[in-house]
Image 1 (cartoon, rainbow, N blue to C red):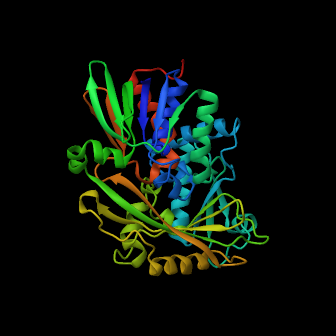
Image 2: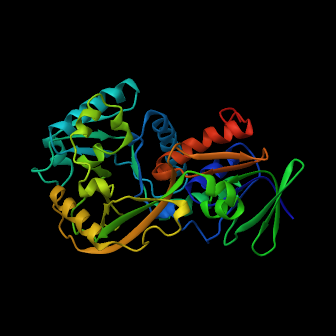
Image 3: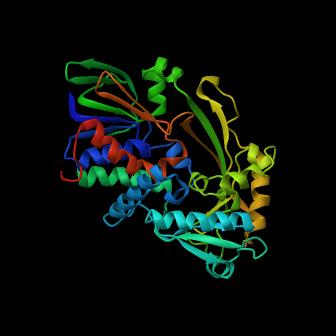
Amino acid sequence: MNEFDIIVIGGGILGIAHAYHCLQAGLKVALIERDAYPNGATVRNFGQVVPSGMDLKWQQYGRESLTVYKEIQSKADISVKQEGSIYLASNSEEAQLLEELASINQENNYRSELWTKEQCLDHYPGLRQTYVKAGLFFPEEIKLDPRVAARRIIEYCVAELGLNYFSRRTIIDIASLPGQQLLTDNLGRTYRCKKTFLCGGTEFQLLFPDIFNQSDLVRVKLQMMETVPQKKQIIPGSVLSGWTIRRYESFHECPSFSAIKAQEDADAYHLKLGIHILFKQSPDGGVIIGDSHEYASVKEGEPFSLGTDNEINCFILSQAQRIFQLEDWQISRTWVGEYSQCQEQDIFNETIEQDIHIVTGIGGKGMTGALGYAKENVHNLLSLNLETI
């Protein structure tokens, strides 16, 4: 029988993060993933790590995540590129929010730089001068390829930290015994552990349907696309637009935010679909553009089509063309992302029978905040001082 201190169910970034910090604490850990490697929300997101966009609590988690990503990158190439992130203001209201956030960042000791229109145009080839008024640059932030990073972090943990990784296995039963759990997978194989972290949404629904159905989880559908490789044009880091300034939680803390937000037309197409325009260049030179957000309760079954809505993509593309002039706007691929998040809390974290910890529903904060959040969560739930182990 396979025996471990900790078993983590679900190999997405939240499961990877919990496994990583348990390994750092010297525990014997197994990570069980239903696919060969993660194939859900973790690998279908935009691939940027931007603590700058989060409220103060999650910004701290994101900053810790930056540290962990860079530490792993120094030992194994997980696709991390530290090229910074920039928020581009398209008018005076958005420029005011950038100035206010810069002041908040200074108080929180998080480095950011206010850039003039000319600095933005110099740094980002193809940026339209008719769009940009000012920018706020975060030099410490990174981008990565989520499809590459998730797999390579798992491989690093296996090779260097002793992770036991079991793929193409679905846990279908957890039996609580005195001081331990007995887990059974879909092929009848059993695993014994002292504590379980359940970080997979599919397994959560399968193993604890009553708790799942009583949760306030909602499903979120996103749409993104990528152009063909640009021949010469280079767009460094992550580029976030004025609609992002009006959307991301960090700006909600700015003194002028409520008044500026109140002037918006709530029926505007982009607001109804949660559209804000982001850019990130992939290693082969293609430009990734996104994204939109549609919401539905997990209790509603299939509330929206999981296919791509061409009208939404055409709108995103038209707005992106107002911001950048690319060498080639031909689209090479489009895809749909999906994640779950809570309506009334920032993450679903519930303990069952003392030693089964359900941790899911991190929403769009996963790639940025999971590694930092999991460090604190492992410390709290396992009563470990990870700073001194």
